Length: 60
Image (cartoon, rainbow, N blue to C red; front, side, top):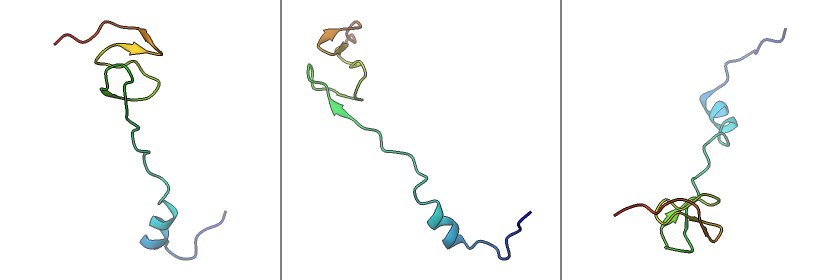
């Protein structure tokens, strides 16, 4: 079995892992009420999705 000849430096290790990060959460405005929501999800404020009322609107 292969064994590393030298210890991997912090710089090498960090350079290799730079792409391993969480993607930013995408937020967009609801076309019905303008509240911010994630795409392809029911709006938590007005309850609309794809032009139709899917759930009851939030009270208050």
